[in-house]
Length: 456
Ligand code: NAD
Image (tube, rainbow, N blue to C red; front, side):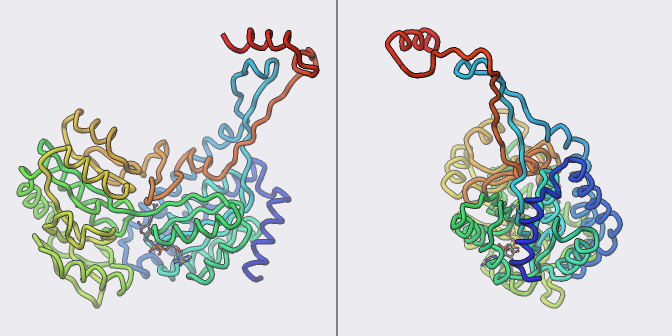
């Protein structure tokens, strides 16, 4: 079957409503759950082959979180899928109003390589839960996992409900030229623009989950031990190759030295000075990215760390002294290099951050409610945490998404169901009474009544 035939086959299936009844959607979600739990070792193994992600990390982030999301949908789907009654309006009295939620139809989900299962399956849960069929396009950079996802989906699902198209730019461009009903894209801001342009040609709605430079702000009153531990935890997971990894630290200058010292202690506790790619630490995905990171490292002022090994694509977690103009402060790092920049006042923080593209995430370490509110209310960012990094993704009650160049739309939990449904409004009116007041002929007497009724 060609790519075009596959998509037409799915479009026909969505017209036949093969995933429309709620019970069928639940069966599809259970099937996806089985796929994950039956194949734990294969999945973690293929991700390790692609870029040496340690087994426990892969299990937690690619299987456990996804199964948890499936269970959340299974528990709530019947309620979400029910039409919602809305209050009446004076203009439509007497009548009732309901909002139905219908699937878009056939959706395209394009994933990034850094969580090669999670980033396809998390949106897929929303797509299935809302009653869509889907085509998945895994990233070609995690090639073993892409092939495995293809095999498993073929084994567990019929092609008219769910299928995989493997490939790189050419295949993705081809998919983008086809008449999908919705596109959900996870990846870089650069490719996000390509996707949105292609979608605009056919007026296809999009959700874009992109990247950016997410700051971790450490204020003068922060608990330094916990701040260092949680920032380095967020930066070393997946070797910093996470869209919401703390990209750089913005620190009050009075506590910079203390953060540096705590960082050394934290990393020696985490790794005992023995980084073992594939066992306790992740590799850089490929040599292109490795070389890009090493170029940044070579132009930087290293405070600690800085070792690397091209043979196994290892880069040590590295703290870098930087200022706003440093090379490393110009683009998303996506690796274990952590620049640190100082500030003196919160006004400076607000001004600096708001004059750059809004990041996907922001982390603030402080004991002050006032500082917390000041940042939340005055700085633009997708979402984030106070005294923590990354964990806002772990709560299905919190929508996850970016703003401006870091993305548009959101998902997780109910928002995933919403991201793949459209709202259909229905007003139902009884046939009695039927006063002739609104029907022509219109005269001044009617206008008098309209004014009395509607404008008080
Ligand atoms: P990428 O944009 O290079 O690739 C993403 C997808 O787009 C892949 O499937 C790829 O095959 C496809 N693609 C690449 N070039 C294309 C082109 N010219 N035309 C059409 N399709 C194309 O991103 P990546 O390197 O896989 O991932 C890293 C980026 O993704 C980072 O910027 C990161 O912040 C972001 N990201 C965001 C999230 C999120 O949830 N917001 C999650 C993970 C990664």
